Length: 113
Length: 112
Image 1 (cartoon, each protein chain N blue to C red):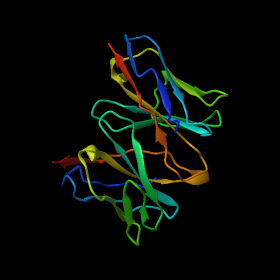
Image 2: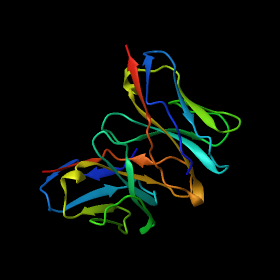
Image 3: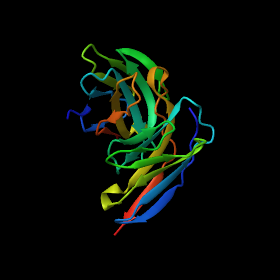
Image 4: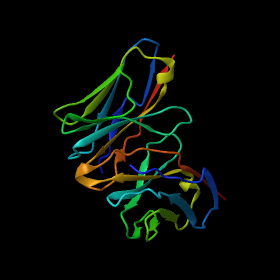
């Protein structure tokens, strides 16, 4: 079965650079979520999109932005990277009006040096 | 969304049942109980969810108390591959759904 695809799997950037993470949800899933997980931390909700519109916002820094495109894939754009942005970034997708759980991707490991 | 409380860690012998408790005393009538797990550095994995009835699937069973203030996730025959952090999350689902907010889960160590 198709899963949530994230790319790239690993990314190394220098401080003050920008990074773009991509997420391809499960076909026919209409909602995408982004999470950040720092070393030794629990996943923190960043932002979600439903039908290409921002649905909810969590603890996403102002330096980050995201969008969902017409084909439902989503991108998380991160600018002015800081060392503290080094983390695993997970994307998840779901069908909004159903009670089923989210399906998570394998994540992108971002290292800022 | 209601807050949950779970033990920080638990051990379980391989082949035995793992019973993971969760307290959610402030749960609202329209909030579901969800369980996810995260094996080291992998994406969280959905296990099971329930509203008020006990539920069972191929991975686990979920027992919810009658007053819905607590629940237990049961892995009937734990294997080494079940070693993970287990998260109990309560949220509104469906049209007015809340976001999945991870708290401090239970680190389950399955030992040979």
